[in-house]
Figure: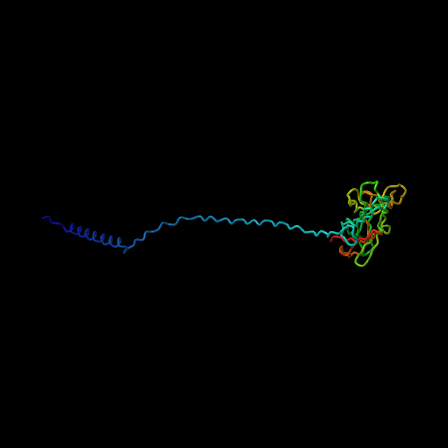
Length: 273
């Protein structure tokens, strides 16, 4: 029989105890009674990319057109009130034999002026004309015409001049400044680009024809000749401006132009605000 030394016995005892401990540990691990915490790896750093905020584009609002009220229709052959830009007409059959008279008047432009600048051809210079204190000017442009193109059918008529028109401001009636403080022969710079109704020439003073005669040294040789007869055709009528002096505080809605055309009737024009 082989005898074991004490060292061998001790080694074997330790081995047996180790096996028993390992078996017990395996039992507890497999049964979940002992949990071994495995350290987690350090987190991977994450770069946060900001989400872009979408740009909100506000569409520009579509401009709303300003609605202009058109003046109500008025029969041009009826007397009474109408608006600037509307005709007053009259018709007479067989006024000269078999010639019919078809004529009319229209007020086609208006403006306020605090003063105007007129040209003196003698001094070859401009001068400023002002109204009386507390007043200003109101100017209207008027066209008067016999309609038609056939001169053989021309009935002609004696034209109505500026004296046929008066300006009503509230309850006050005002006559024209023509041949009073205003000399129709002078040229007004503010009217240089104000043409006649048919846009043919610069509008003269109403019912006047201004021409060079060489016989009026005080006006540089120019003369304002008053027109008389109106002949058929758009270029043969009376056309031009009439100047009135009104109180300075006058508003456009306070004004109307009165036209008296003898047996052909009367009309009244109001002005756009």
